[in-house]
Every structure is written in C-alpha cells, then in structure tokens.
Image 1: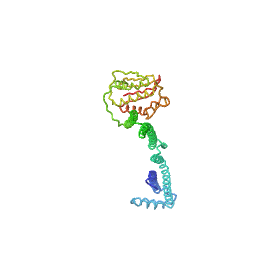
Image 2: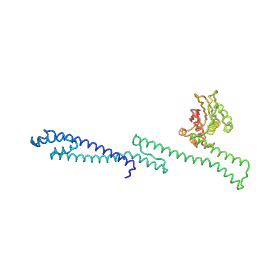
Image 3: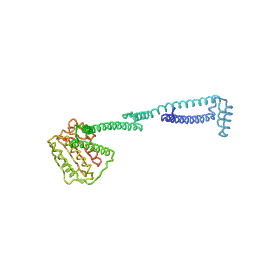
Image 4: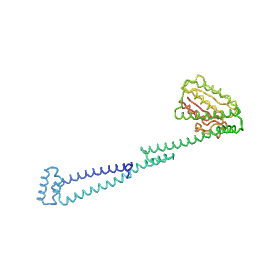
Length: 388
C-alpha cells in the first residue's frame, strides 16, 4: 500500500475520523448506561421482585454504605450490588457496544474507500492526460463532472490543452508557410548562380538586378517576421511622437501613386482637416498605410478607385481604406488578419505578397493602443478601418 498516494491518505484520514467518532459515541453511551443502571440498583422498588424485603434492605444498605467511599471503588460497589442477571445484562451490553464499534469501523472503511476514490478519480484523469501531453499528444480532454474546485481545475486544463494544440498547429502551419515563401526566391537565386557557375549565363546587370530583388524580398520577409514576433509578445520597440494622420496618409498615397497607374486605378481622398494630433510611431504608421493600401491595390478591380478617408473619432482618429473589388467572403472575414492568409476564392492572388502584411498592420495598430477591423462595404468591395 503506497501511503504517498493522495487517495490512501484521504482514505486513512476518513477512516480514522469515523472510527474516533464511533468510539466517542460508544464511550458516551456506555457511561450513560452505567449511570442509569447504577441508579436502578439503588431503587428499592426495582429490587423488590428479586429478594425478600429483609435481604433487599440489607443489600440496599450495603450499597448505600459503599457509596460513601472513594470514587475508585465505584466499579467494585456496582459489581457487589449486581446479581447474576444484572451482570449478564452488562456483559451483553458491552459486547453489543464492541460489535457496534466494529460495524462502524467497517462502514467507515467502505465509506472512506469510495469517498476517496470519488475525489481522486478526476485527479488521476488529470495526471494521465498531463502525462500524454508531456509525451506530445497535446489535444487532451478530461470530463468535468462537478462544479467544485476539482471541476474548475479540469475545465481550465481542457482550455489549456486546446490552446496548446491550437498553438502547435499554428506553429507547424507557420513553419510550412515560411518555407513556402522562402522557396521561390531561393530557387531563383540558386538557378541564376548555378547558370553563371556553369557558364550558361553571364553576370549581366539585368540578371544581377533580378537576384538583388530576390535578396531584398528575403530581407523584407525576415524583417517582417521578426517585427511580427516582437509585436505578438509585446516587445516591439516604438518611437512615439506627434503625428498628423491626415498628412501621413497623403504622403503615403503620393509614394504609391506609381503602383496605381500600373493597374489603372486612382485614389479617392476624403481627408478631414484639423484632425487631432496623436502620439504614434511614424515608421510603424508608414508600414500600416503601405500594407493596407498595397493590399487594396492587389485585390481591387482595374479601373476603379481606392478610397482614403480620415476623420475624427472623439480623441482618436479613424482611417478608412476601401476598394471596389469583389469583397471578402463572409467565411474568410474572421481570418484576414491571420499570418499567410489570402482570400483565394474571390480575391486575386496573382499579385503576390508575403502573406503577413495584414497581420503586421494589426499588430502595429494594437501595439500603439489602436483597433483595426475588416468588413465588406454595402456597395461592394472591402474596407479596413483603423482607429488610433
């Protein structure tokens, strides 16, 4: 028997508690019985049927005389006053008390066994599930049978297990997506370098320029992943200073104008004057604007407009970037800010992109105490609304 087991400790404690309570009750009952029985022996009317009046008087007188002695002689007095029938009754009563004690002990043993088992069963289930998690089986669930502390522990354990499994799934998906994104530029670089080493290609400027573009793409991807990981653990370094978001939006639009001309798009600007100046990181805001505007350019319909709108929202500023494309399927809306998400069903993927631009935008907005939301416009197209 392993006494280090919680169940055995609980069973032993419960058994001893029931046994001690039973012994106390038996002792009290025995004391009360002896007290009342001694009073019975001192009552002349109770002794009338057993002996003659003279013998009864002599016995009673002897009993009363003995009562004047010390308390240490109480048991002897009682024995001297009892006849054979009384002694048989007392012995039978004592035996009954012992049998009752044994019965209570047996009941206590059974009750403690089932009670400790009922309490420790959820703990054993938790222990077994935790061992499976340690072995790598992250998706575990234990039954929540009660609403007490053990039940609450089981519920929290199930939530933790589900989050661990989801995080592991996301980690594996992230690694697969990163490998996929790195594969194309590395393959291009490898192809050019092997051709040059084999003498098939000459290191001409256009070839070197193509290789440089792929290197820059890799550099941006690695930098974006680093910033994203820092933002997710709240360690992103921010350099806050007064920023006019309307002016910042205007400058970003001017820089991205050439991209619009390639797709025959144009900006529709609704930039409110006299917006509140906010304490923001200008570089991070540039990245947010760049990612949201290029996302709209990438997925909108050629020949349409991209809306850039700024307005006051209390003490904050609201920025809206909307396109006139096909919009986002309702089932995809909850996932647009996930890493490497692309709405492939109705939003064009041919224009490329790293797949983490919107994730970066969301992380940068929230790092500055803001909020971002994606939704479909009633008149068609998608819009991203930022409040900072």
